Length: 471
Image (cartoon, rainbow, N blue to C red; front, side, top):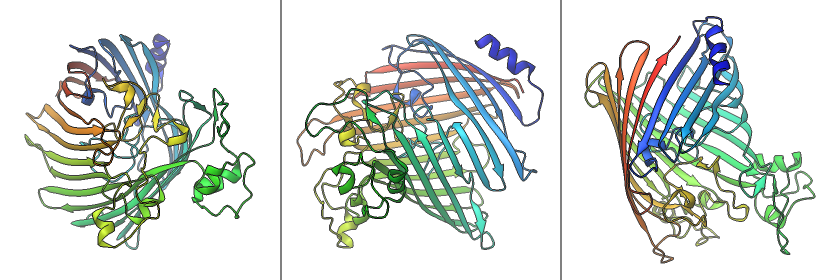
């Protein structure tokens, strides 16, 4: 199969917008468990177990900026042999553009949220940690500028499909986002704000439950889709699906999560400074500001040009509120939620028990870990009450050598310790990657990563790779 694929790409017609890359990789560690920052935020392309040898073949076509109407595609095949033998498509999409609007279908690498995409520990709701799920999406890849470019708008609307690896099958994804910018693209100060919204809805249990109150089928009609999209609790607008349950009528259809994001970017003659906050939400408590403490906060400093240190990012991920107490801003505005004290199960989804992961990897921040990936084991819950400090750095040693460092220290549990006395676990993880540009086509990489703590197996891992750009 791989030989046929290689013959195809070498015989493809030459186009200046077409690109073909081939990468060879080798991975090993002393524990046979791949360290956290070596496998995280890689779109599921690095296996949890090692040693292994891998290949990655990428084909892509970019938009021609001179054309108002254009199309592009992306195709990436990853294979591993060793402790885990896999072959899968990390990307496989086709996209068409008209002006600032884009329609695409397939698997595509993407993240959602406001922040530093180059060094982040992972955006809260949609981080680029899991294999991309199949979707069809209409949106704006960049900001649409209006009012003489003083206002920018960026939006997306998508429909997708989860895998059938959990207790449910035929589960669908509804996703939308809307972000705004105040300030021209070349202004010194830009202010940003917006949100992303994900809904897991529909589906049926692979193995039906027989208990009296069991829900084996979740509604998936167009009537249900109306309420999934609008988030209306009043169910008198459109007739309800006959499969509707009391859980749907009392709340929203499906399971909802996302983040409310704000950011401020200041540009100077030497670089830029970016501050952002992604506030987690899963229930209506977010509108009463009860869990406003929860989410990802970041401060990023980036220098223009090549330097030993070109970028520094400090992030704090905290999800210990979970609706159990009023946040400082809720107290400031004297808001009280009628459901105050009811625990929000971040990334877990309660009754459905499917959780927010795809092909066994976390869709949101990888720092909210599934029990199956930890040395605690048990597959009983997700460690979704976390307090993490993270540092990311990057720079150039010489013109041809660049480096990236990631490090995190965390305290994690599955319930808030001050309300429910349960064990808490500490974890620290670090990684350093160095890239050597041999020439305009060939790049070598060396990656070392280390885990130590109570959540993950102590591990020192190494990965070397060589990437060659064919065209």
